[in-house]
Length: 477
Ligand SMILES: [Zn+2]
Image 1 (cartoon, helix red, strand yellow):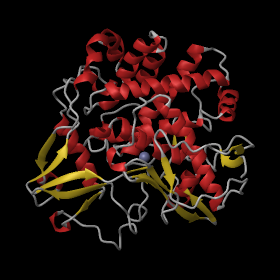
Image 2 (cartoon, rainbow, N blue to C red):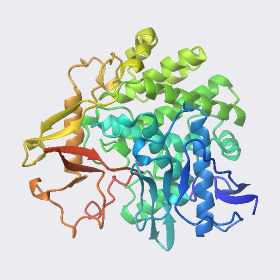
Image 3 (cartoon, helix red, strand yellow):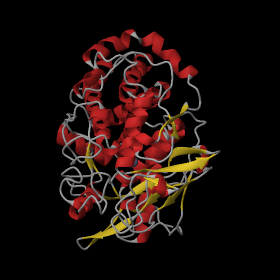
């Protein structure tokens, strides 16, 4: 048995370092906490060449183990996969032709496609593997987010996937050294901020230059500023923000990435790789604390942000409070007033995590609004109680009662129907049905309208890594 295997550092298409392929000790697959199982014959560990199935197996094991080791050091020791997943998370490295990957509460599913003579496997990219893993980790921490009908909640799930990729990549010393050399810890684009370079290239080659960011799938260094998601169109070129969750997620991811930089420079104005490792662990912990404490409400970004700041007061004596505030204010996630108020609200916020109901409230909303020939459909609302007034810049001064969880659900569900993302058991109830001939072949839809006890209930089927910026056959016409 070989004691070393080869793997990509963060993505097969990453540029910058002359050494992208590294040799690492054969990963010891941990079967205790958050166990996973790759559904493939396990090849003997050896130094396989990239582009072989055997390489992809050990490359995936390495990426998954790195991501899981990072998160399990932060999460409560009792953490388990979401109930429907079962004891082990299954990993399916090649489920057929597509430029995508997804998490569906059963498995992490990956695909392949041939583009300009190159076969691109989404399961070969540690960035994509750790993004999908991030969905599964967040689902284990906060399963109520899965079906909450809110643009910001869905976008946060995507952002957390990208955050998981970034923090997992930072567990590699070679990545930390390269990023420090290139950026000195400043908020600059680097291989760390560029996520899924190869898949981004493949999608642009097939679907046009505006279907992803210019140099990768999504870049965490960007200058998008928070806007009310319900005022945005449901899709837009990658150079603009839309209410599509992957697109909108880039605002939170950017603020998070800038917070990493600010915290690093607060720790040491001439940071080294060990400082960066420390900050990756500190902010990972604050993210977990913030998610556990934040109520699930329509303006979810500002709630998570403010609870991360509060967590910093408790855990670190407020050492990174200004770093966090500056990042969230710069990207509009917290208004200037909220940034001032948030520390004052400290004591009242802490009690909130104790009294969150397990399940989100359900409500029947009008089907007519979505062109359906049914009176109502039932949805889960981002309607937890106990919210307090911290707001994003674009909604500063907005009365909390003005934009309700029902409004948020209507906006989100309307986007889903407009973009043909709902699978219907009875297609005849819809205002239009896209036939197989003009829809993308075998395109799975993120949501499903199911009959349950005489009601039509809208439920999520999966989270993917994001091709909604124009990547089905209909969009590319
Ligand atoms: Zn995703």
